Length: 44
Image 1 (cartoon, rainbow, N blue to C red):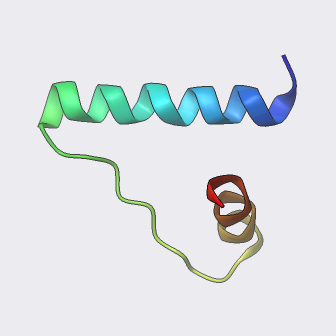
Image 2 (spheres, rainbow, N blue to C red):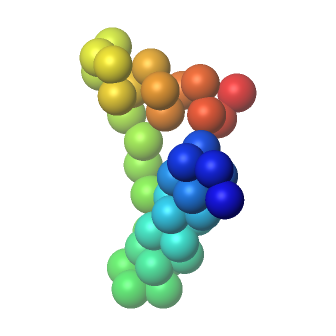
């Protein structure tokens, strides 16, 4: 499994955990930094 797919799978798992434990979805914010740029690229 490549690193991009591994990251996507982990985000999906985190989302499922958030819904189970808190009844709320994960919120992803954009700060304009490198990490935000990578996250944005993965979702488009």
